[in-house]
Length: 344
Figure 1 (cartoon, rainbow, N blue to C red):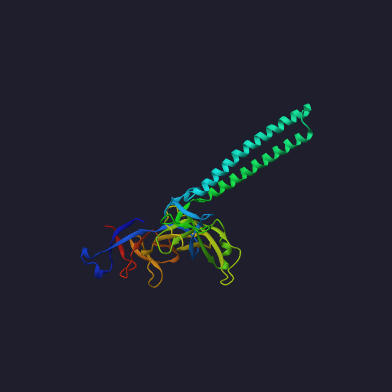
Figure 2: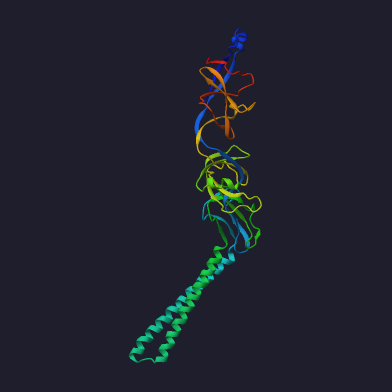
C-alpha cells in the first residue's frame, strides 16, 4: 500500500501558537475496497500430496546412487542400482538358451514339413510323420520355455534398478554406497511437495457452506507464506467419532516451495454472503476501547469504529459503517477526533 506523509495541525486554540517544528507528522494509507464474507479460520497440518518410501524388490549390495537428499526427480528417473554381476550373467545364460531353442525348433519344424510332403508321396509312414510332428511341437514348447526364462531373468535384472514413480523431491537417500540392502527395505523417500494438502476439521454446522472446489486462503503458521488459490479438495462425509468435527482436505499450491510440508497452516474459510469490506495494514487498526481507525474526511480526522472480518499476517479485513479512503497508519493515543490535517 502507498503511504503518504502528512502534517497534523491541531485546531485547539491553546496549541495554535506552537512552533511548526512541534507539528506531528502522520503516515496515511489508502484503504483498499474488496468483497469479503464472514470467515472461519481453522488450523491444520500440511502434508505432501504424495509420499512413497522406495526399496529394491531384491537384496544385494548398493553399487550406485544417482541422487542426493533435496534433489528434484522426474517419473522414471534412475535413483540407484544394486550390483548386478550375477543377474547380468543369468540374462546372458537365458539369451543363449533362447538361441539354442530357436535352432532346435527351426530344425524340428523343417523335418516335420519335409516328412509331411514325403508322406503325401508315400515315402514315409504315418508313424514317422506323426513322430516328426511331435518333435516339432516339443521343440516349440522348449523355445517358449526358454523365452519365459529369459523374461524372468530380465525382470530380475530390472529389480536391481530403482526408479522414481512420480515427480517429486528426494527427502531421504543413502549417504554412501557399498552397503548391503535387504529386499523391501526403504532406501529412498520421495515426496511431491507441489501441491501440498492441508488436513483439518470443521464444526458440523459449517459443512453445508464448505464444498469441494471452493477457493480459500492458506497461511503458514510459522512463516510468511500465503496463497489465495488454495482449493477445498474433499469434505469427508463422516465426522470424527471423538470430536464430532468433519475432516476436510485443502489443496495448497506450492510452486516456489514457500510452504513447508509437515508444518501447520491456517486456512481461512468463507462461510457467509459476500459484502463490501476494506483491506488495511494491521498497523492502521487501533483496538483501544473498541476496534477503530482514524480516517481523513474533508481534511479532518474522524474516529470510525469498524468490525474485523479477517486477520492476516500483515493485513486486516474490516467492515465499516461509512466509506473509507485515507486512514492513519500507526495511530497513537495523542490523536484527537476533529483535528485538522494539512498536506505539506
